[in-house]
Length: 108
Image 1 (tube, helix red, strand yellow):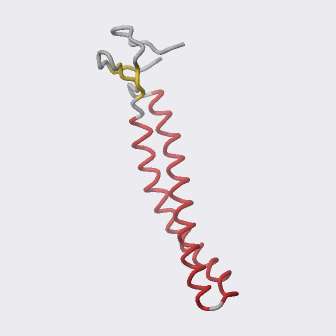
Image 2 (tube, helix red, strand yellow; image 1 turned 135 degrees about the horizontal axis):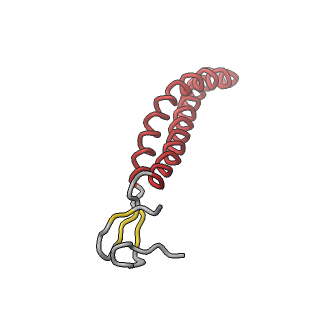
Image 3 (spheres, helix red, strand yellow; image 1 turned 180 degrees about the vertical axis):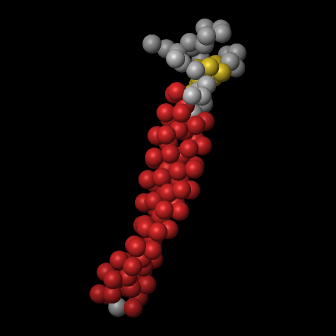
């Protein structure tokens, strides 16, 4: 079933997804902050693994471990934030906009 505008009955409807966008951004920042902690742990583990390849291996292992830890934190935070934002879009915000008359509404 197509979504119709309650004001003009048009089916030219766009989802705004403002909550999803905002919460995803917040989640990325929060996850990145958590990723710093993961980066420190990852650098330590990477350094230990890289020790088998000498001094340059320790350095490269630490860098790789830190990058992987930070990326995992940012991605997981962004995904969690997007899920929370989607719930907010569906239940709280007027998430749909009619492209014909520019009326903003929510589907109940």
